[in-house]
Length: 212
Image (cartoon, rainbow, N blue to C red; front, side, top):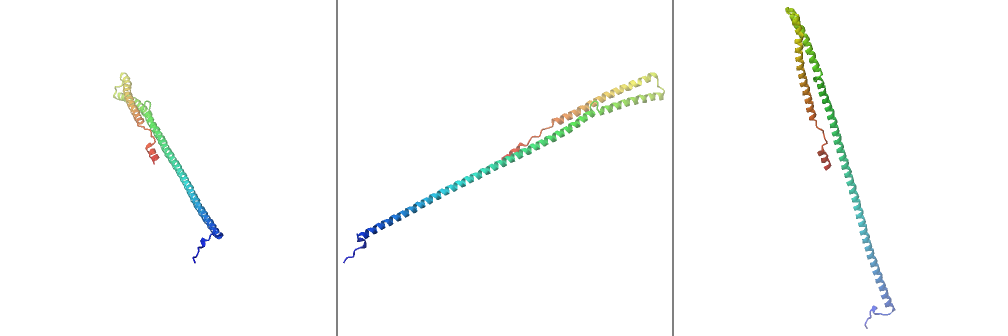
């Protein structure tokens, strides 16, 4: 006698089994679909999180770079101001020193002009020497004539005139010497003033500092 398969039975119990199997398959498919959807959602969330993290990191890096650039620019500007200030102070100090030195030297030339120029100590001393020589000459010549017995009204009258003439010639020579010395001092002063040069900032140093 042939044996019939259990699934060959088409009664109520077989239909129930088929329905149960179908529901199981549907449930399994639903679970698989939910798991796939969950995995897809998790992957999308991970991608979004990575994107937000990358964006945040990029923004932070950009902010840090901007801050660093601002700091570098501020440091460069501070260094530039410091260099310019240093050069300005050095230039001002050099100018002040040059002006003070120029004033001292000009004062020395002015004192020399007062001494050797017209009406100065040199001329006054020379005139005093000439007058003393004239007076001494008159006295000595008069005394010599008296001693030799040649002194008389006529000869005595010519003695002062003779020595006045000698004194006049001496004064003319003195005036020439005074004029020459005065001219020499003036030429020296003019040469000194022509050699004066203003001191300006060293712009090569400034540009070199700015280039660094």
